[in-house]
Length: 420
Image (cartoon, rainbow, N blue to C red):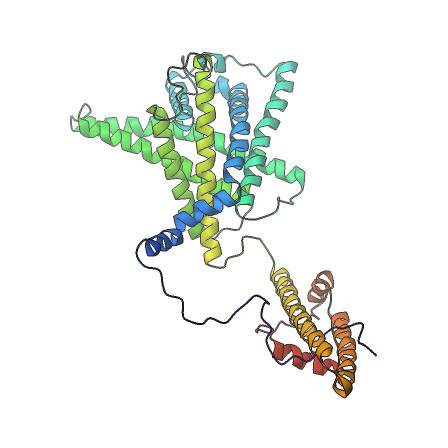
């Protein structure tokens, strides 16, 4: 009778999409403006921006900046509540620390900034209310790190980190403490380096020269860049738990740190972040400026991450931390999907040929299709699932994958083997 359960046949041709047509002539390469557009769109920086946009980078940056402004206030309050008494009696270190904070977040501390320095030094965490406030503020700061991690992993097309939540928070807390230590260390190094350079130029009587001023300024820029570089690299590699190759990590972190440095300079010079002469916004000028700054800052971080992600994709580097067995399991899954696609394509060809045949040929085709149904069913039944394959790999019983791509000919050979 009719083959009601059509499956596959021993197809000897390669099926194409129904709408595909053979090329009647070779495609001509673009010239003029088209050639220029093609070259521009192939640039890595352009593809990085396209990837950033396609992954919703602007929306991710907006969410990060919203969390960042609360986390910054919380982190500074926590830091000075815990360790403010250490620097309270050291005017030099206190001034250097305030300058370091303003270097990272321009205009944050000061008489006209978001926070007054004297208020920071007067915080008290030794009362019950202070302890409760500290816990809430620490959770706020950790929430920002969590949003940063999820956003960066989204840029790399990765799912959320599945590390145990307690370990995640401990890691985030360690990173937050490490970042605070970096700011404190940069303040100390700034004091030491400035004193050293001034003493060195004083030996030659050049302490008031332009050369001394330029050298001190350059040393400050190098120090700030180093802090930003370590921070950005830590956000990509440690916070986000992405196995980025060292060379690509350093290149992306350098781009991100340079972009953050330019952003800070533009903000400090008033090129961005201002509210103009709008009297309705004058009372919120500092807060609005910080929101704008953090939004640009988060965009820079995500664009630099997109640069790394595009480069890794070009080099066929998987951003997931997969074991060799997991990679082999995924390759086996792709191979099986390709074989089923070949079988389904040959199935459609068999149906078409069966419908057009008549008489003895139609009966022979029906018999062949029934045989192929059973052969393909046996083949699919013998294929292990992904979890079963991983179990076989752990036991050392899984066969190695062939280093070839499935074709109609290979599928035909496998089906004949299954029949025999």
